[in-house]
Amino acid sequence: MKTLNLIWLVAKRECKILTVNRIYFFSMVVFPLLAMVFFTSLMDEGLPEDMPVGIVDLDNTTTSRSLIRRLDAFQSSKVVAHYPSVAEARRAIQENEIYAFLYIPKGTTDALLASRQPKISYYYNMASVMSGSLLMRDLKTISTLGSAGVGQATMRAKGYTQEQIMAFLQPIRINLHQVANPWTNYNSYLSTVIVPGVMMLFMFMISAYSLGMELKFGRGKEWLKLADNRIVVAILGKFLPQAVVFLSLIFFYEFYMYGIMQFPHQGDLWDIILLSLLEVFGSIGFGIFAFGLMPSLRMSMSICSLWAVLSFSMAGFTFPVMGMDGPLQSLSWLFPLRHYYMLYQITVFNGFSLIDAWFHFVALVGFTLLPWFVIMKIKNAMLHYVYIP
Image (cartoon, rainbow, N blue to C red; front, side, top):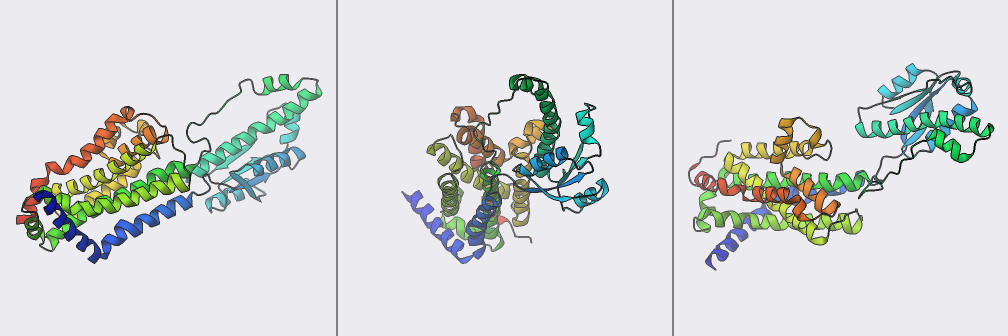
């Protein structure tokens, strides 16, 4: 009972600090909410649409104009300009006026009708991977449809049936089944990881910052005295209010994602709640560990910010970890966001059992317990260290 009373006293002291210092309000509430609204509204359409494409049509026939109309009808592509030469179209790409262009040389239709295999070219800008990949897919499809359209008309004129024509033009028919996200919705895929990653960044930073401020203003002894010099009690009382605020924010975000925006998920409510708890406790634990590793406000916050930023590259949702070099694959296990992402993919997004993601569950629990290894160093810093700017 005495321990709970001490935790409550330290927690009340921490609540006063949170209300006085406006940095906490902005970093724990305002900025995470702005990030939530920004990323979910940025990709609100789910997939980029009507990306600008140029045309260099030197053939200017009914067949070439039909190809252009088909390209313009695609969801991702929008024909915005015609250019007289490849040089001008290339300059337009370099000036970011268009993302890609299709080049149809003179005599393309005549060569198609004569079965001489003409060459049409498409150029796309891969400075933006997403737009380049989507437009490459559309341009490749159009290039295939051009020859297929002429071949279909020729075979129909020779008396072939539709089944014979399709067997010749498309000998293998592809049935595409996109599991869990059949709409290819980038919002439901990326926002569910990017926003928690941003929130982890703030949790890392605030955890280290709150301990560093105790050291900076010489309040460490007062803090420990209020907890009867029991560092575990002091830590629990100090971070209890922060955990409550961050958990409320995370639960609101989960409701916003799955309740309001109707993001697809196969897991049940308890999987989502467990993942949220592990995210908050693991992030706060890492922030405390970073400060205990280097009891300095500046150095601990630098470690937290660096680790959080690297997490977006090492988590595996933008570039697969299995495609990285061996040392980087091993390093990826040291980032909490990596384990959060894998738990989300396995249990929430695809609906598998928690036992299938037990290693990532244990890893996040391990991040929560990391402060245990440096807790005496934190106590020693509060009692004896002198703050150095």
